Length: 204
Image 1: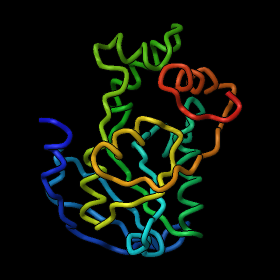
Image 2: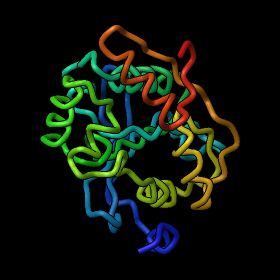
Image 3: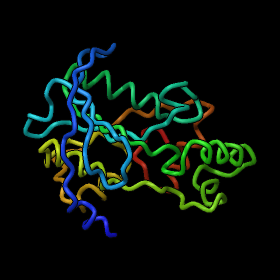
Image 4: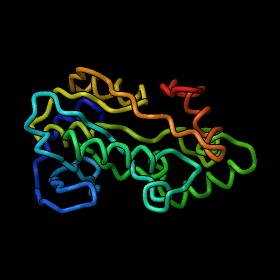
């Protein structure tokens, strides 16, 4: 099924519940009829879905980084940056269940083992017989559609997110850079993002 055809399957809002967090009150939104049948979430701060062009961050789940603060990636840092910014200024965080660029947690840990042998993050996925990045963002477009959002300011350093969302009908008014969280433990990982997929990362 093509990406465009997938996005013709309309999702709907299943529930919207306000939860107090350390970043303030936030509406957690769940959905019906998402094309991959996964439990993706939208976190809406300050009724940002009612804004004309809300700021949006699409964040792929990273248990090691988001929950356990691994220093081998920048995922947890980017998540905290978005949450802090959105709590003050408003925004929508789409939290997608795409662990390990879509290969799953156990396979991601296998890929980490291969990286310790000298492969970069993309080569490790390919060595495990996956494509270098299994993610697609049509489900994010479905979620935005269910929230009645079609024009956004996209908070990302990933050109593929921009390309896919625009090809699927989302109008990106502006791209907002995220910070570059370079550490000794993740420098090779970030450099591979720049070299292999053209990520916009300052200082690399």
